[in-house]
Amino acid sequence: MVKFIIAKQLVGKKVITNDGFDLGRFVDAEISKVTGKINVLLVEPDPDSSLAAKIKSDDDQVKVPYNSVMAVNDYIVVDRKNL
Image (cartoon, rainbow, N blue to C red; front, side):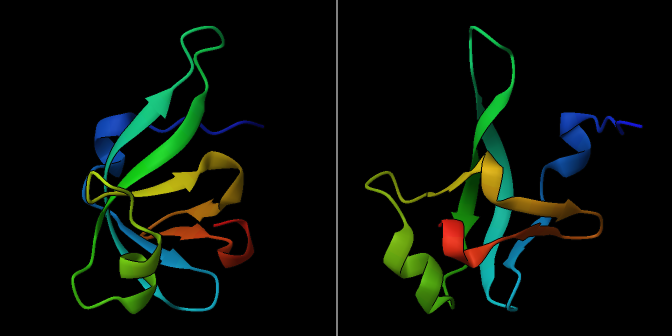
């Protein structure tokens, strides 16, 4: 059974890696115009996170590939190996 989540329920959720590193907060997503599927999560980096500082892009956001998302509940958990 597939569970659907409304996008505005995700905004502001903390994004953490499966080994406990805090990346920041979810702010938006890049969606494929062709398929309508999420390609990338856009995360506002946590200023205290050394990992987020290493992987943030030129526009000061962390771009997390959707295929690295492991779980969504109170937090969005992503696989650190796929970053």
